[in-house]
Length: 69
Image 1 (tube, helix red, strand yellow):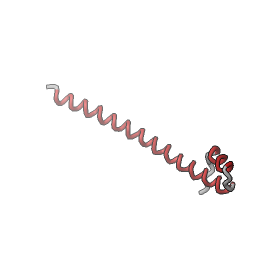
Image 2: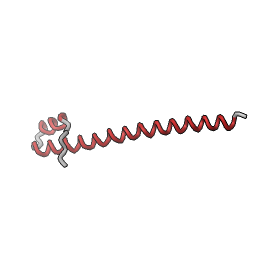
Image 3: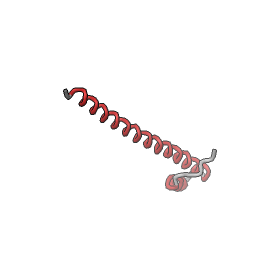
Image 4: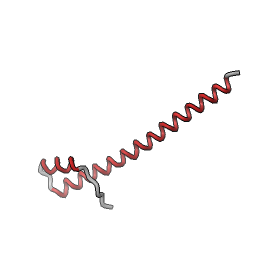
């Protein structure tokens, strides 16, 4: 599967540093692929935070109801 996206700033920097065009393009595509994975991990982490907050709130409500007599 060919990665269509790449980070143009990285590509330009590698080209300016003297890297061959094909290697600069491939490196920029690989970094862009890793960046996309980090975005998905951050989204999953946000979901886990909401789940934890909901669980904590429900626990407090249940404990309050059980201990208020």
